[in-house]
Image 1 (spheres, rainbow, N blue to C red):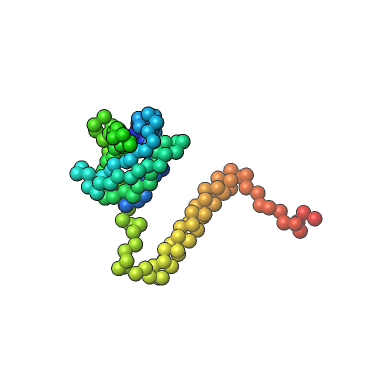
Image 2 (cartoon, rainbow, N blue to C red; image 1 turned 135 degrees about the vertical axis):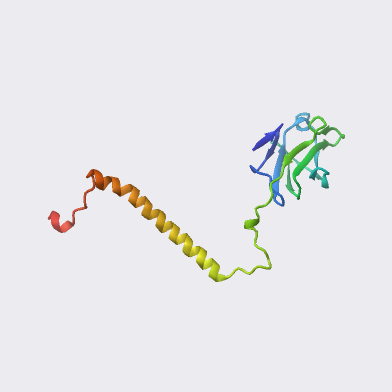
Length: 158
């Protein structure tokens, strides 16, 4: 997904504590730089600053980065000759989303087999209810309009 100025991510959302692959086809790639480094940090204070040398491909420079914690993912690019692409002095800044906490299993909380069975039973009941609703919606109009015919059994046809 292209987000801005020749920068692409392999995901639609940037989420804290996840890996993201970033591709860069901006000014430094277009000027045929041989080596580009992404300089990045998190939050308004650029916490946990890192530099990662990006891999040059035919499609641009690419790197896989583990996103840290903070409200924003801030970065800029530098080539081997100390030429910078920092979005004309504004840096590239993207909002980070929090990792959904309901999907995180805590180590201290044991998962009981009973709760798993309850979830499975609830899932099966929801499927049965959906099937019943589908059948009602499909067959009631046919019965009312008279377009519903019972299938003849083989013994009656002979």
